[in-house]
Length: 376
Image (cartoon, rainbow, N blue to C red; front, side):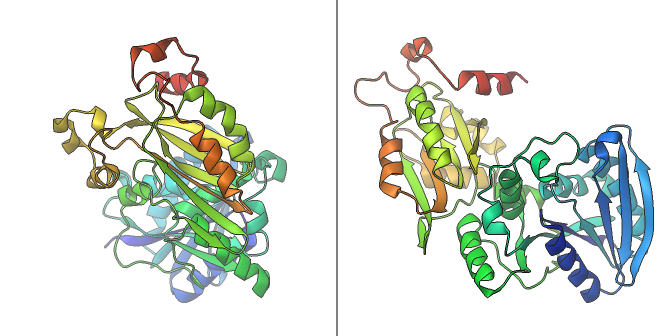
């Protein structure tokens, strides 16, 4: 019989440890595995295995390549498989900056099939620090939470840990901290329950469905909302965006909001969905694949039901599923200014039609980023 695995993530190690301790106490026979990645750039990782009584094993692991992916593939998965015959529940206590998605998808691979199943993806948060951390523009290397040469931003990682999880919990802080954190999470992950402690599902979680909750084409994006000073603004339009106008507006859009994500349509890239992902002043724009309207109908059977459903909700008889759907969250948002700025980036009657040959002669400031990623 396969053994359930619970992933517990979070940048705040005291909160994460508290959540792991709750699981160990609640599930007799449970074992937790943690990899300390402080020295991973030197190819060294400390593996600590413990149960409710304390540390069972502590070992220094040498890796051929010092990276998080190598740690999961070369040591974590084999250790989970080795322990699976002796434990009722296996808990993966993820290092501070590790995002749960790649670990979850590794556990769903063929090697663990029939022996392990993913039963929980939980992110534990410090109620006192989370609201400030999601606004911080620091890189992990500046906060001491980087594993090796990790140049990601702290807020970027924290946002992904929150949004991918199937449940969340708040630890430490006082009642006021908990109230503010709950309000922030209600905007960042409105569909995710906040629990007093992690819960282990009886059935296996599907990593494809977990991915569809956050991937740009199918993401369950927050709705327009206002909670005290915290706002979430949803901007939806059917006209395409002018690449130069949007590029010029990006700095203001990302520096006046805390979290922004969604999908959008550039007039010069008529066939491609683009993904917007920004946290605390750092923004990423990526190609998210073709719009379904740009594909022959026979190819629709090759995409997931969730992708077809998302396209159907956005469908317009003229432009198909092409849409601007961007969501911005932050304190004291100037909603009118953001809407006005984005609307000014749309093409107008004097511009060439989307996808027209004339766009080939226009400057495309997104080309260095998008074309590089497409050719990689």
